[in-house]
Image 1 (cartoon, rainbow over the protein chains, first blue to last red):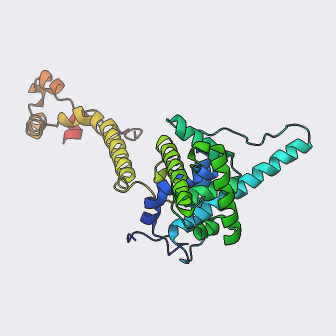
Image 2 (tube, rainbow over the protein chains, first blue to last red):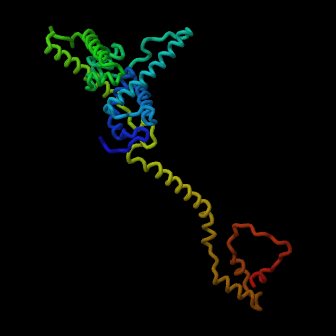
Image 3 (cartoon, one colour):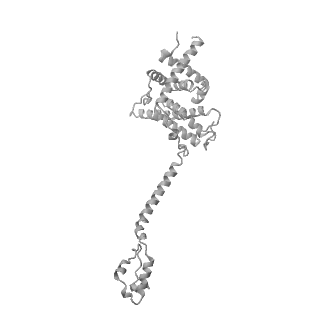
Length: 178
Length: 134
């Protein structure tokens, strides 16, 4: 770990280490924000603020990377809940009929195949998609991914298997060869 | 499905997913850390001297402008320094009994630089040029 300046309210965190992990954090924030860039930036900035002010404290019990992912995930979830409650309140007032997904993703993925895979990933329930992202893309174990998402290992295993089955259904050409 | 097929299937899914997410991350590059980090000390390394340098340069520019405006304006007057030798000679001639012989053009040529400050005028303080030079 680089020996850089430590954060006043989070003395176990080295700011240079945070900078080193920044791109991975943004990528995870993008996943949590459903591919919407502005939302991902907002989530990541709120997470950084919580870390800087000590609202989220790193105790060194896990790796810094998984802890950061968990902080980002918590902010994304609370943001999503706030948005959902606002939409419900508006719906009750019969002002606005909320859609399932409020905005489209920003990512102009160049390849058609990749766009298809991403679309299939987004069509999964949020938690399942996040689990696959953490395990397949970020090489976390299922236990670590469960820690990031704040769920039990058993629940994580169940979601993991369901997510893989759903992806095979949506992308049959990636499924098992008979 | 036997375990080998299962592993192969999972590897293909993993490759496809990782490829798609990598393409997404390439398309949506992360903004600079310093743009999102809310800390005061999170400016770009090496750029910390920029703000004090700009502030110092601005202060120097303002000081130079003030000096040029208020001091440079009197540069002509300062350049026209009084020739002490000629003035002393003129004073000596004027104080001699033949003071009336001093050519008037010499008197006219002697012009003191204009004063930048207003002097108090005492009423009844009427002194001739000769008296003032004595």
